[in-house]
Amino acid sequence: MAKEVLQKQDLAFSSKHVPNAIHAHNHFQYSVVYLPAASKWRSLRKVLNSNIFSGNRLDANQYLRVRKVQELIAYCRKSSQAGETVDVGRAAFRTSLNLLSNTIFSKDLTDPFSDSAKEFKDLVWNIMVEAGKPNLVDFFPVLRKIDPQGIQRRMTIYLEKMISIFDGLINKRLHRRKSLKSGNSDVLDVLLDTSEENPEEIDRVHIKHLCLDLFVAGTDTTSSTLEWAMAETLRNPETMKKAKAELAEVIGKGKVLEEADISRLPYLRCMVKETLRIHPSVPFLIPRRVEQEVEVSGYTVPTNSQVLVNAWAIGRDPTLWEKPLEFKPERFMESEMDVRGRDFELIPFGAGRRICPGLPLAIRMVPVILGSLLNSFDWKLEGGIAPKELDMEEKFGITLQKAHPLRAVPTPL
Image 1 (cartoon, one colour):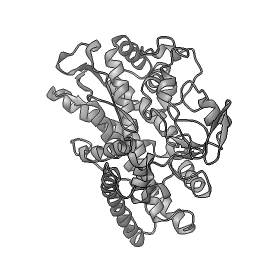
Image 2 (cartoon, one colour):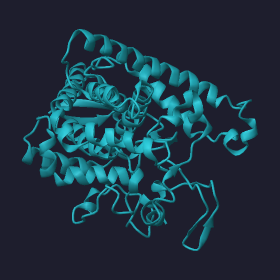
Image 3 (spheres, one colour):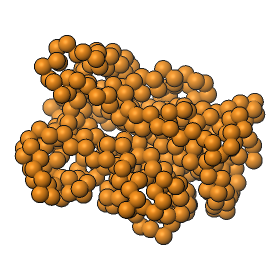
Image 4 (cartoon, helix red, strand yellow):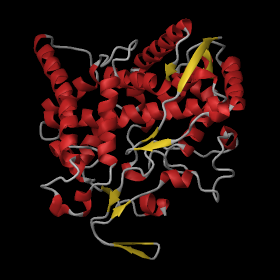
């Protein structure tokens, strides 16, 4: 059914269902996630694909990501010398936040060595929670004015905070561009250049909302995937042993990985796929909406229906996967299956024309950070918990997070 909806009848299902929460700050009118698949969406998508997520662009700013990974390892080293526990999800969140902010604004939005990202992390998580909550207004639009659960009211406050952060950064940049003719050409410069050349294609409001999309979609998903990957690895000592052996042999013990190394680390790549299979970061993907009545596999889907694709259930389906609840990266060793939207048994990023535009960045970042953490330290769970006793409960927003943060102690190799 997923293949039918996301590939064969992709066009009919290419609009997104816009929950009332996303009406805050009129975000749905500017968001590349929620805009209908028409002209404006196409031009924003083009900006993303050519200026942020293209192979050349990603290669060009790879040194930024290497530096952020080194900072993460340095932070863990400091903790290991002090014998302190690392909150893996939070440390990964700081890394992915700074990674994005360096790509877009050429600066850190949080201090990589302290816990200063907590406020930003809470902000992003709160946005995810409000957007993912069942909202009466979505079922009874007549209640929109009352907003009985206060979802839109809270969402407005959260988005306001984020937009004002971006506003400040854009103001500073515009000021600097006036005094200096040529600056660094990061994503913000490219967006500002584009908006000067074609103001009707993208303007300042679009730029702010695009930043909002990138930060909300790109930080939490990456860090929660990393946290799940580390949790599964710590829970399965056999996996840990195999991963460490591969890293020691190919890279050399204790070294930080580079993106070019990933192609030589098949087991590490399988671990990432297996994590995305059991813990897809957006379990229902982003719900679709049909603009006119359409027939799928003999069923009639009425106009304006919301259509959910359950990537979480597909990844755990016993008819597709042997022992689906077991973490076994080996299952991918002999398989060509990939997460790029061609194999419908594994679609953590969706598929078709509305596939997640950040996919090329995610499949570079996650294995590099995971491999570097495993190759630089030995890890054990906080308080000497036995691997099998690790709590793997999930908590649900639009993204799926670990209900209890993973806390682990790095020890020097």
